[in-house]
Each structure stands twice: as structure tokens, then as C-alpha cells.
Image (cartoon, rainbow over the protein chains, first blue to last red):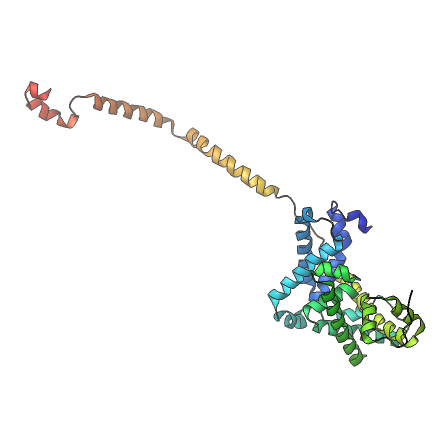
Length: 180
Length: 139
């Protein structure tokens, strides 16, 4: 389904169909808790549905939805505070779970193992990033959003987004050099 | 017009490239410098793998979850309001109809009795005293 066909939000079912995977993915990667991700994704579309008349098309629908999701994740984390990560480690998804979900099947077992190691290293680095850095990192490298879109989705200035990304990359690189 | 860099890319330039900041001179350098191209590709590959893994994982996790249900119009609430209003209007009517049919007859009798007592010049309890008094005083 073409993104342009749902930009006016008239067909909200189409909007949900098109953008739900991205919203769910972002929330899941941020929280690492499928149940919470599902709940916040529902909340995101519920908020969007109720506020659909206020959408003026100043950004894309995806950016607008992502902004709602970013705020929901931030609120959720601030409610959970430090308890979140402790609970996540124990009760929710294994932090290294994503490494086994590589769509790209490597040509040899060695290459596949190396790929898994790299993903695990990035995962663990992302887990330790401050919330702001983690958010922009996920939007850039999972959702392929550019700096302007990330700035619109997070409400940050472009310069701040870049600073977050540079710092996040530095930490990720350090972890990769340690682990791989 | 692009310029060629006479040095290797700094870490900041490589990271800038990865986050989408892509000046022409960096692009030009990457086409001619294998070392820098390898550094960018190595980090870029790890990031691409990470993105791919998270997308696949998210897709798998989402597969079993419920679909968004848009908030339906709360017809039951509207119905409840109408039912309450109907009840408020109907209750006095029903009560009136269900009232004992003898009640109105009894009311009539009581009213007549009251009228009768009011119309008497001397109240019934004082009638014995009135009889003892002279006629001119009792008037």
C-alpha cells in the first residue's frame, strides 16, 4: 500500500495496516517487552485516531505516529524508572533475543556466527544507552528515518539529534570492538 | 564540484556518513580509499544487521498479537441514557395507574367530612358547652 494513499488519515484502517509494524517494532525495541509494546502500540493508534482531525500534514503520517509513540515510551519509562530494566532482565524478552532473528542468512556457519555476535554486541550497547540516545539510534538504524524526520518525531533540534547519534555510535563501536 | 581529501576520514566523518551526513568530498574519498571504505562498510554492516534483526524479531513478535480495534461509538451508553430518561418519564404514570382505585373514593369521603366540619358554626368537640350557654352568647 502506498504511503501517499493514507496521508490524509481518512482511511484509518489503512493507516494502521501500513504503520503498525513500524510503531510496534520501535516500541518493542525500546522496551523489550512484547506485552508492553502491544499495549503502547494500541495506545498510540487510539491517540492518533482521537486526534486525527488535528493532523495538518506538516510531517508525514509515520513521523506523526512515531512522535506519539516516542512520547508514550518516554512516559512509560519515566513511570517505570529504574525498575524497568531490572524487570526486563528477569521477566521479559532475553536481551540477546534479536540476534537469532537475522533475516539475512549468511553463506557459512562462521559468517552467521559472526553476524550474530555483531548483533548481540549492538543489542547490549543499545540496552545501556541513555533513553534519548537509544530512541534516536532506533529511529535511525531500525526505522531508517533521516535526521529531519527524527527531529520531528522526537521534538529535538537537528543538532541535538546528531549529537545523540554520534554519542550512541561511539558507544556501539566500542562495544563491537570489545565483543567481536 | 567535489574535493578530494588528502587524508583518511576521521572517526567523526565516518560516523557522520553513517548517520546520513554525506558531503561530496567524503563520498569522493570513499570511492578511492579502500581503508576508509572498509571501515564504513564494517560499521555499516553491523548496523544493518542490527536493524534487520530487530525488524525480523518485531515482525515475529507482532504476528501473534491482536489487531487494533478502533473505538466504536458507544451505542450502549446512548441506549442507557435513553432508557434512564424513559424510566424517569414513565415511572410517575405507571405509579398513578397502579394506585388503589379505592383511594380516590376515600379521598372524596374525607374531603366531604372536612367540609362539613368547617361549615359548622361550633366545632363538634365544643357542642356540649354551647348547649349550656344562653342562646345570645352561643351565637
